[in-house]
Length: 345
Image 1 (tube, rainbow, N blue to C red):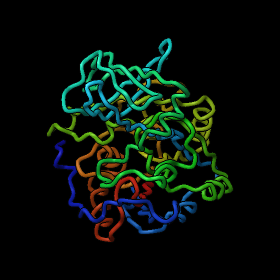
Image 2 (cartoon, rainbow, N blue to C red):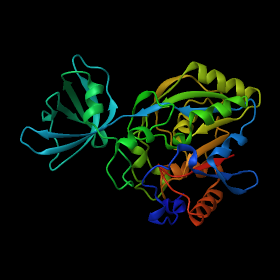
Image 3 (cartoon, helix red, strand yellow):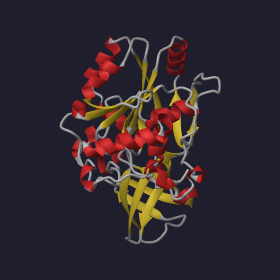
């Protein structure tokens, strides 16, 4: 499979730069794998797609204001992106971070964020990540919340705002740790979730902390040689039990987003049973993959040549998916994180 197999033409004006007026005001492109039908709807119509006994699985990760700005002792400016928390040290907060500065940061470099927070670069790591230890006077998360910025995706060509603090976050977010939102979940409101429950659908959660790897381009022509960045996930016992019971009784598993899909498929046994627990997911799903857990996928529209487009192509078939994307472009759907939604049945 070649990278060019997952390309399509996207007019720049279709890349959503801000959220819709309401979470549930987005459009929904419904794709039926069995028949190949593609239908334009509104997101609020998604409730009609559920049946009693189905399960809806959401990702409860919470986006943190992970983009920080500091100065070196010498005065040079540094941009720091919190990527992943390290095991708790004695007396500080240790993180793997991506950094941007005029010169590479050497071990021992001191960083000053404000009078309450400083840090030291301990060592460089794999994939340009650096191990940084933060030392603060006060609650770390409170300081980060005050001085940090939400790391909006690179295709959103503006600075983050107060509106993004709520809208680039799902209504079910509760576990801090993501540097990007699980964007398929942004469309859901508490009211829609209650309507889905009222149809006899179980709603359960897992956690996958979305990392910056979701935005990194594929740099190999033969996509089979691409290596995914690992992301932490956790699946509660109750979630695994609910999903396994539903599947045994003929219920369908609806995954809200590619993050949920990757977590579920990572934790799936060959026999099709979901295993509770936590770990790292670096699964790379491309056409030819046999899905073990997920029966229906709710997802946003993804970048050309991206690993996420490859995943949905594996789920629905590449030809059908590219035809759906072509229709979405023709009907001027809004694309990417703040864009419209797709339901693949």
